[in-house]
Length: 106
Image (cartoon, rainbow, N blue to C red; front, side, top):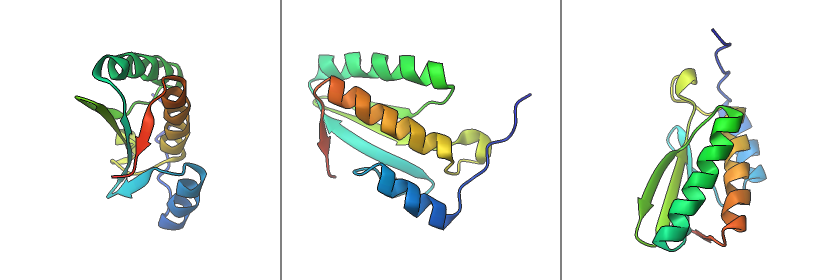
């Protein structure tokens, strides 16, 4: 059995958010939405899923017509934010850029 991830403090979350511009905190998760066509969104999700499998962490994903939303929290840390969440956010941003997704400020 692996180690339990350590939740970040409020101040640490504030610092980490500055490292992933465009992501916003909503309770105990960070989220971001992107505009992308439906089929492009499906391809982007598959790419993100491959990254998630490699790093052993996953986001909650909501695919709608013309948009994809990602929500990230660490379930193993009591649904709190950890460094792994911010690492995954940066990786999702890179995948989104590769797929031509446009960030939405909602």
